Length: 205
Image 1: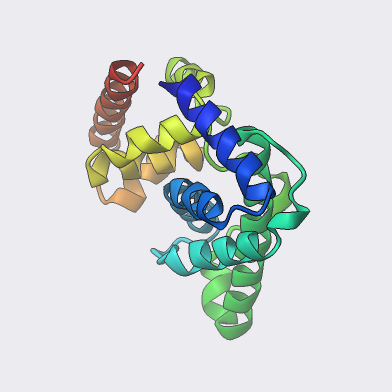
Image 2: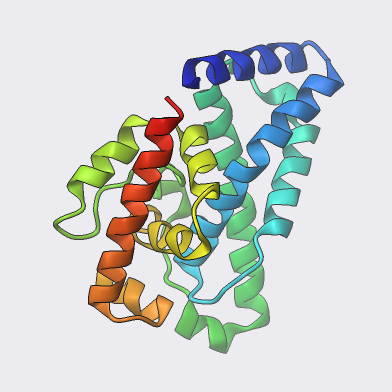
């Protein structure tokens, strides 16, 4: 299934680059969910507040449509990397705007860092603390679009704990604080979420 999906995406990229508007629309529709998770991961890693990432996703897709003729790659990985670059630029603009309109609040809420150095937004970063290696290795082996498809099938709590722990690399103590639960409860929730995610992805092989 994963190989078929990669082949389909590569074919859509080729046809879109040849000027097929319908293929371009289908391609970006397939990537919208990916960008949604990527935007949430990036925004929530900088702002300790809940934000609606839909505007950021829409802006990124609009710019990707507008500048698609500048994309020179031909693979799923190259396209995702290009989209991440646009998303990171838009996220940085969002944060600068947020800082400019709410400086006092942002001093308490923003954790600053270099967005360009943050690496892939969806995938398998290094674990935030000891004990996460097996699941991190599991996530690292699977491509990003399959991961997003599986994440969408999880409950909101499972999505949230994986987003905070695996994508934002937060320690369990901070995940527990953000989710309003005890650390042991969050650790158990995370384990169940990873097990469920693994089951979904293995069923789709």
